[in-house]
Image (cartoon, rainbow, N blue to C red):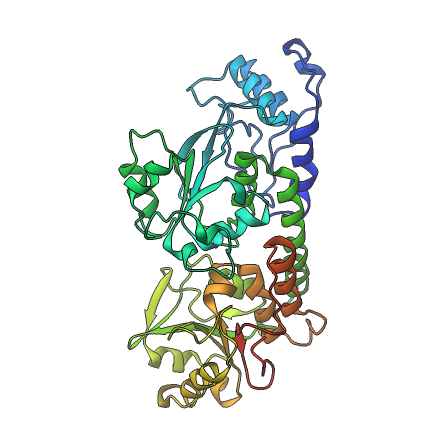
Length: 435
């Protein structure tokens, strides 16, 4: 479910600074907690007894009411995660609110229940999107090891890329992780990668948390969980308020559109001789298309990454095509300044006989988007581009390049000028400079 803008900042500040002075006998004097509505997500941390998007005094009240039989037990009420509701849960919730807990039990992105010893001072990060969040909330000083994906991205991670490598993003080396003695590992959630690494580290005392940080559906909740774990509430509040501000602008303008006002969109990338697209289970690009006010022509097809027949695309006749590009290497990215390969990439696509009669091709509505940077590393960076392509009249005032620059300067703290460097999107008229 989607987040209400600002709710995290409002509640999280109280998490660290409210002084608790409530005794057990005062339970009935405390205002009854608000229960989460369907518009809020449920923060997956044990102690969130009323199942809203934060842990605060209302959770303390609610768990006491459960204890006295006045309220039904909720899944996350067992703050100590010991199988029963008792005064130890009251103490744990108080400690979480003031940031003094000695352990925290969470539900990660792949629905695994993980208990982490607190405070966390050393961690390993395996994916660049997760590392971007860690930098955005100011916790990169806690990172002691990274995967090859981060190691190779020196422009974005000048400090983190110099840390010891634990090998592959998808299958990191358990022995290398153990040698670094981390308090936890933040692992990619694709496939069964998280479970496999957890099995390899079983018995070491090193918890593994699935934190992919690529889906619009789970991104804010994951940022919040990491903020609780790393004691970075104020920093996370600023970050969430920033990107949700732009996301809300886009959603507010597209939510009232009729189905007839939405373009039919084919998002694709080509691997070998197969045409891949985003099915209804894809939480990245499929959700971005919806949020930007488009209709994903594959949105009713089961699966995440799916292969489609070009003849099916012709029959669906999309009015806009965006190609998630990045192959071959050095076509797009932070280390690319030359547009020649992007131009050649699009020119080749526009002349493919199989798509020559599709409306998007005939009308020149074919765009290139660097998926690595604009979808999987920062979905909220690609979203403004999609919104402008789908509804240029609604988003004339939106500047995706400026949003991207602010993210780099303010939240990644990188001296990088997008006016001088980088190729991330391409269309010969609308983005002739690749910005």
